Image (cartoon, rainbow, N blue to C red):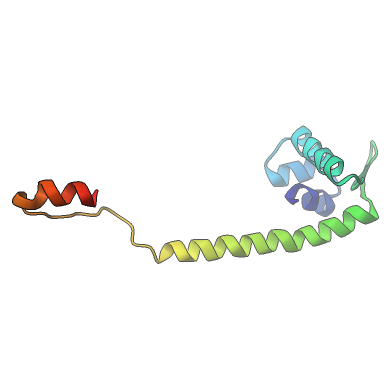
Length: 106
């Protein structure tokens, strides 16, 4: 979906690939795979330009919402991770019970 959005934004496969930090063939192949899975043409390819089909434009519009929601979910997860204590855990056990309790605790 990010690749489709980038192509819609940039109108060019090379610039979209640069924006996504992938090669142009990778981006093109992934968009073709998306088209095959959906059974619809999303992008009209010519030698000089790239045009979004009406269906491609609508899917790109909705993909923006999906990607934004995924980013929100990631932010929630990052925030939740901030509440989890981090760092080394040191556990002290007296020697007489260490052999019994430590193996259970670990």
